[in-house]
Length: 360
Image 1 (cartoon, rainbow, N blue to C red):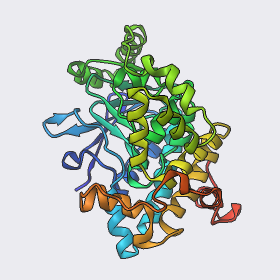
Image 2 (cartoon, rainbow, N blue to C red):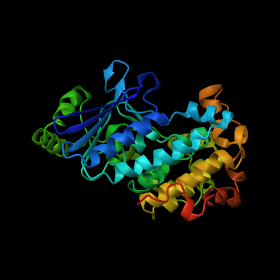
Image 3 (tube, rainbow, N blue to C red):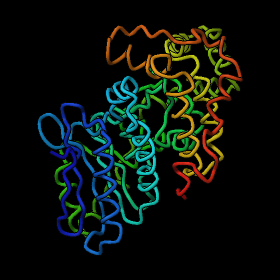
Image 4 (cartoon, rainbow, N blue to C red):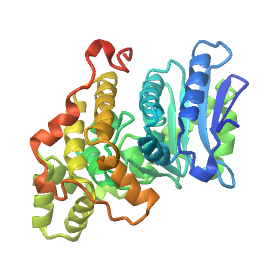
């Protein structure tokens, strides 16, 4: 049975991610089904706009997408499953397809929206809408599992105001709907109670335009990031992760101390890789960033193969054994060298053979 429900109603193509027990975590089959639907509708004159939502445990909405299926990543590493390579190639191609989509792409980021869920929501085109709610729980928590914010995360986080992107990328901090709008990762906040009506409005062009107008005129709530913006910009603009953590630890304020302690729990290596990633992606097109991310994620699993992989260890500690005691290597932020970081940015493929050479 497919975990992606696809239908055309009225003038809309509608997609429901239907894997609620896994919080709609994306499998390779789900990526393929969503890609196939978007490609079919791109040139279908019946379809004027696309809507994407998640199925919650109690019905539609309530959970959007918790990310990629990291249990599959763990199993694939152990089994030497070649579909792990396909997963990232096809997921990143889908992210780019959404970014360049020629029709309004409307995404309902109700409930959890993390990692791969951000990849199929944050890239919505200028024609579309990214709708958050009072239940939105948004994050890019990859450094907690020895990975980096992929799915174009380098590109969209680097374009957040000030240094909010660096802060979210390094800490994995969870934000709500108001902060998502402030970070330019959502276009507006609607009450979850009204989502079913908005979903139905997609089938009719006039009703959809009324929703778009209402979202644009809705008062903007103030989240928690606004009050921390000066601190975030001051610390997270520093040149290196070592500088950032050192300055936070020297500051003496409770917020700085808590933030430094959080960073100390993340993969030291992937913190350095992530900061370099964002700083590079700030000056790239999305297509170029996704090609770079494809290089990087290959190295996450192959620079140190199998169980020696930082990503494998992070997933083991958080999801498989659940001991929450990852054995990071290197163990400290200060032990990561420039050479270790640079290795992630050397492409394993010549340009003409890159898996994402056709993007852009």
